[in-house]
Image (cartoon, rainbow, N blue to C red; front, side):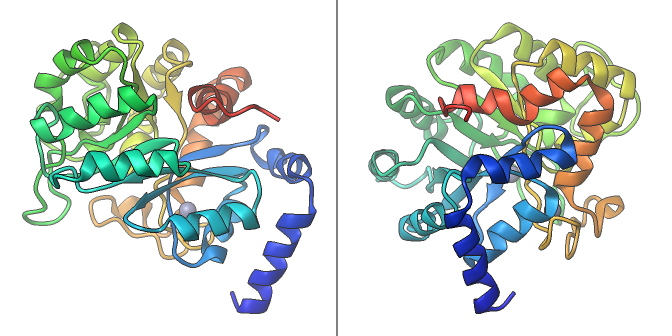
Length: 310
Ligand SMILES: [Zn+2]
Ligand SMILES: [Zn+2]
């Protein structure tokens, strides 16, 4: 996309009423869609290219570091289409100070928090406490199996330790995401694979905790969320019904155009060249009824972030 095309998009976004654009986008999926898990792209037009290409109305930008001006510029260029979460190295002593300032500047949550620390370790614990103080949700990447050699673990120990965390921080809103969060919907999972396949064994930790703890939500993004819903259709239909108020659609898709261009995850060759947003919206749509689909792709996140549904 060249500069002229980008300026045309910005101009169109500024002129058209928000609801009109949402109405147009609603047609493709039968409901407007908010992508909770969209990594901010430095070039403004690249963000809109993914949303528009995938038929998505709004996205929650995930950022790390000093990009406040760029986020504000994008929000101004496309009014009503972008909310914003931010992250910062949780091992640094100034993490609380930096994240508090970001919330004062308009960040609506912490995320994604993706660090080589324990899920119940001191670094994340102070973030859980801060998220409760500031009344913002915290989105956590949980992964124990490498995608590439020596990648390391992220928020390790989830299956063993997280029930205690959920109990200890009842005022913190946790949003779980990534491989180990979703693989643990099955009771027979023991870190054998990043994306386990086949029938789900009932009673997995993630499934139980979504039911038991009002402060736990599930981010359905990435191959992990897609795989969890695609591996066992009968389980998926029941899971979506039981947790219909706790699940949030997200893509975590890095494709360029909302149609799969350039998407490549070495751990999931079957997804190469596909758009994760489109794949997951398709699985969700065929796995549940329209009223539950609408909650997962739109209603729940608006309630959670206290965004008026216009
Ligand atoms: Zn992640
Ligand atoms: Zn995509």
